[in-house]
Image (cartoon, rainbow, N blue to C red; front, side):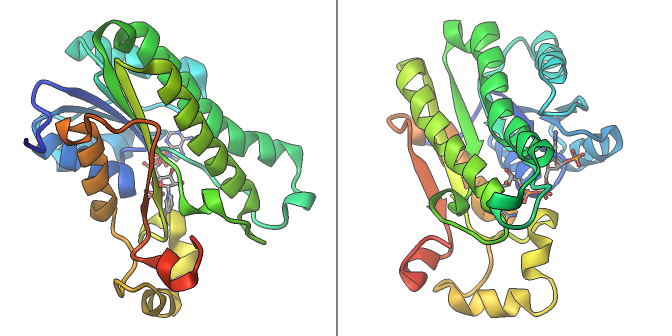
Length: 252
Ligand SMILES: NC(=O)c1ccc[n+]([C@@H]2O[C@H](COP(=O)([O-])OP(=O)(O)OC[C@H]3O[C@@H](n4cnc5c(N)ncnc54)[C@H](OP(=O)(O)O)[C@@H]3O)[C@@H](O)[C@H]2O)c1
């Protein structure tokens, strides 16, 4: 069995940098026709050029259903399929106790982190996967399993995404497999507040594997789930935490 994605079309939200770009690169190197999207056209264009392998792109806000439809229609018109969908874009506009959050930022966090993966999956299902099968990979977080005094709202959305993953896996089989990735701290812009300064050294010492995650660490699992290697896995979450759980006694 090979970790190959030949003749597969893969659409990746939040594909212009960080984990999404690493997943796009891994998929392209495995033979997939990759199509990335994020809000900024210039960032998508530059990332697609770096990814190579004929990577396509279309800018759009993952949290806007009209943008989702336009992006997926562009991919379908260009390549005739959406075999793999990676719901990877996320937002974290609020830091602080959940009890104090304003509803505007609560709603925005849910819109991008939970509603968008549902909408993109609905569209991919209705336009292609219901008839042809497919794979959905959702990027959640170890935060899904924890409380936090700072990113509690974000963690609630990631917990909802884990449950959405299970629910959709139950509904969309046998044709479509739906799984989630739950990384701990990965060295990207998104998590910069955690690793800048002395954060990286301090955190790295706590992980049995002695370092923070890289986007490529996460891409390896995303490839495993999308390829035939993941053929009997659905409704699952894969935790990628450098051993954090066994060190802390909980997912952190
Ligand atoms: N880094 C970590 O430690 C960590 C840990 C656990 C889980 N995660 C999850 O991993 C995923 C990727 O995070 P990352 O660390 O790779 O972040 P990143 O490096 O900041 O990349 C985020 C990507 O998403 C795009 N994006 C952001 N908001 C968007 C929106 N509303 N619509 C469309 N695209 C949007 C960004 O491009 P534009 O700015 O051009 O839109 C960019 O391509 C997220 O789901 C995050 O929650 C990250």
